[in-house]
Image (cartoon, rainbow, N blue to C red; front, side, top):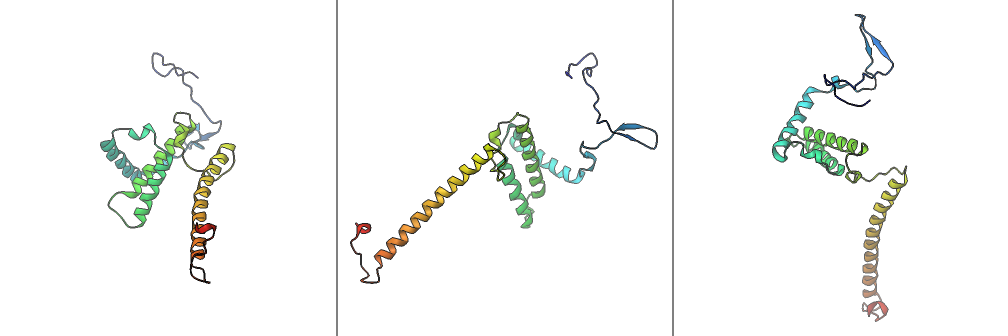
Length: 182
């Protein structure tokens, strides 16, 4: 339905329901909460610490700066780094809350991409699931780049080894003057 505000500001909206109802001991009835998330189970302790990360970030970078969009890989890299720093025993920052913030920001970015509000380029992760042509193409490109670099290293190593074997010939310990030596 269209969201056209009327005199009271709420005309044009409807109350949705799942079709399932829950009846309380008092006789009150309402739609079930199934499939809607359980916000009442989110820890206030953890959320308070994550809110501190938002506050410090806003002071440093400006309110809502992160909502302009950053690559998902940057968020996940930072989250993993903070997790490992906490595991290492570092307590110089609130590494757990920092990790949680980065996971939330990555989740936000992922959702904004799905809604078409952020460029899909921000999802710069390599997918190891080949369920569509785009993922397959991206994976092949990454692996091709890896193998091209690896092949150059292997070839250079092979050539060095052949040159070393040739120059250190057990027969006379001198160079033969062959094609490889010219």
